[in-house]
Amino acid sequence: MRDLSVQRRVFKELIGLAGLLQCREILSAWAGMKVARIAVRPALLNQTIACLNQLDLVFHVLPDLIFAKRDIGKGGWSNKYDEREDLPASKGDHAVYVSTSQKNLTQAVNADIHGDEGEFGVNLGIPSCCVDFYLTHQDAAYQKQNDYVPLVAANTKDLHSFNFWNNYVSQYFGYSFLSFFPCSFTCEHAARMAQNTYDLMHSILPVEADEIVHFQKQPILYTEYRGIYLFEGATFEHEKTVIKDCMLHSTLNLNTKSHQFISKAREIQVLAKGELQFTLEDKSMQLVKNRDWAMCTFI
View (spheres, rainbow, N blue to C red):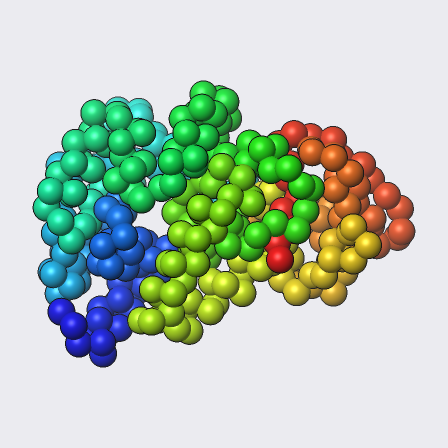
């Protein structure tokens, strides 16, 4: 299919069916950049397959449903599978692999099924440095919720002002050009992949592409169990993130204690890895020392 108007219509339909992030994955597969793996609700499988056929893509649907285990404090996001037996089918998803090449598709499916995560990472188009980082830190991440944000932050030399193309933390709010954990927030290979994905999406869905860039440039406070917070419109001044006039986005309900604490903050300063100082609305200060917290600022 080479009719741009038809392509745009199909990809917009996919956004409605599967969301912006999964549409990004299908778009990357369609461009031959990678094999994509997406999760599709059973009720939407036939419509999704119809879209894949319209894009002349090859795909494989696993016979068994997969079940996501909800992370604590992350707005329904999941970084692990729920492996309990007899879970209701209504809670499951179909794992669908998508590619332009049957050969590449088969290699990716086999690697994933047999647990060869290194090979599967290559099939997904992930840079080798990020694949190595993922494999090296896999046990440490899995002990909690299988999220790498604190590990990536610890592996990043600087304390702030990271490359916004590497802001995969914004995925928790539905926006990111990265589908994997970068080895650091300054990884040039990951940033290049994100920029290439932007160029691709902008050629088909320019409004959506620019919207993702906007959110990737916003500072985000990550906590492992107490929510994730995006400060839209915040500024960075004198080594501090100034959030007093920003729009606060949160993965927690407004009435939770953690959200109420963050909503009272006016400035956040990173003193060291896992060491944050909050200036509150009454001008008092509160120090938080926790390796599971990471303040991520991007430029």
